[in-house]
Length: 169
Image 1 (cartoon, rainbow, N blue to C red):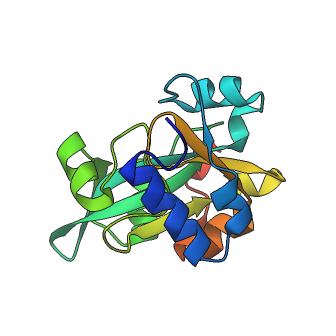
Image 2: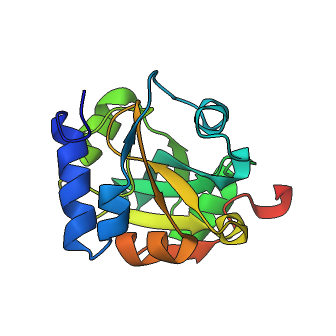
């Protein structure tokens, strides 16, 4: 599979290029095997697990409605759902199921990219990612990743910088 053969990867590449992140779009890598966890991605890329931006989709209840919340979380720790709820102004936050993730991102769990979604998502970008010169994120498929920076993720997603792990960081 070349980097643009998969429709979700092609959408991510187009979104990166449209956002002016041509280096990221051209840097999409297709790995030999699926990397559905930060540890697997870090091992495949030969980088520290903290440099992996896990794209975690949550179901947040905001003003009585279920809305998607994307947390780009460093692979070095876990997002705290109570912290996410407070940051998003939600009354509750829980992990989203497969159907909810697919509906709101057009992508599947294990390959959710920060961009390339049918609509804009409420996005929080983990401040722990700022420690890394290069941050790796999924590119729409479980075998695809792309390099960017913390600032690049913020610009790309229109997300808000946040300590998503809360007291656990």
